[in-house]
Length: 299
Image 1 (cartoon, one colour):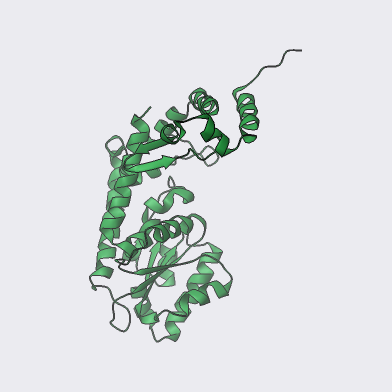
Image 2 (image 1 turned 45 degrees about the horizontal axis):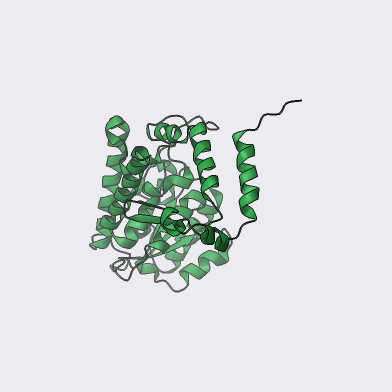
């Protein structure tokens, strides 16, 4: 009986071999390891020399990537191919940061329209045009979402936190009421802005927290009309958001080709822009576009 050794089999074999070697041994065996086991692109350095990976294993991984057509798959993703086969849709988050905008002009025009609306909203909060029910400017913003409407912006806001931030950001995802209670306890309701982040505006955990946040504002003296100044929404269900009390002009859509886990580049990243300022968010998009372009062009 003849068996065929696949690329996966070779990788499993290599993984078993390298697992028995310590990182110290890898450095002792290769004087140039610190120099050669690193990548540098668009002002970012990736040092992977301290991982259990030797030259033979790296070569096997690269060969396997070529055999799988990895570079071609990324190219197809950025062109809007249907790479999400389970939902029969594209995963075109790279367009949100301008990658290949010239090849997808209609979609890019839609993205620019939402981006401009986001910029205007952020600047209204920062310049004091938009204020809370007492007439004071906002100092804090609470993002109410779950999954992709929470993880991405939470991660970036934490990573980019700075003494120069324009607003303090907080994230409520847990439906356990204590989570939101602890977030709100030190905050001033008159100076707190909320982002209700739900594409469908039907997510149970998000709506539960949103209702409790609205009740918190009401107890502090905000009228139903004033609450509109304290709430923004990232959603495509404008009718449901309006019924909640959010003005249509304060609802920012995302598209079905924006997967949740990749959505921080879209209106879901509103908290990022409110924290650091629009120019900071714009630089984030620009940096991601540069990395896209590097990935498309590099060997």
